Length: 205
Image 1: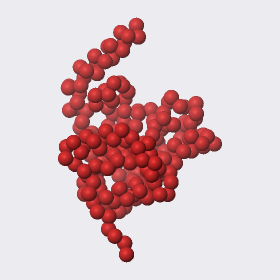
Image 2 (image 1 turned 135 degrees about the horizontal axis):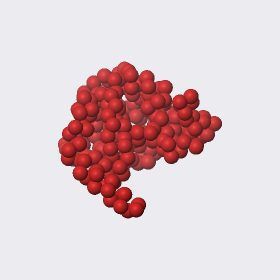
Image 3 (image 1 turned 135 degrees about the vertical axis):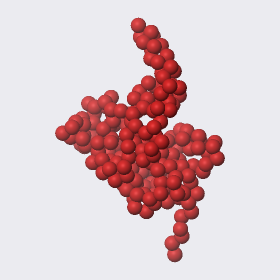
Image 4 (image 1 turned 120 degrees about the vertical axis):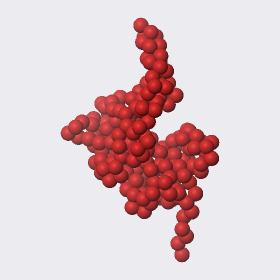
């Protein structure tokens, strides 16, 4: 006899080894779960048991819950271009390289998870973060998921979120409030960001 999974979590912090997202939501009184292999060896999205554990967590989400995900980006960014060798003619990259294959498998399984969630649990929101130069959103499976779920693009900066890095980042989400976020942060954070840029320029001089 199958038992129904209880829906107890309002937030799923996916690929968040530091658990900062789940901790922040818990501090506001929400129930949050985290999933990352660095903090729990059972959370291996590339293994059958690890993937099923992720599905179980997904089914434990309440209505209108949030899946906040920042999948690994190192094998998709410009810094590793000589390794992954992705281009507009070959978005999959050099699949003869184990690291490239592993990075792709993580993203394929992540996209599969979102696809499954869209079929069995329609009432949830999604927020995905990647550096602006990442090839991850251009993977065929993610192109399909982005279209299927209507994930809109928001371009922002990590410094707007109290981060020391000034790197541009791309958010994909189905929440209208995220696309409006830049206007909210612009006035409040511009001075802080400008000050950081100025300081870095002086330091490099």
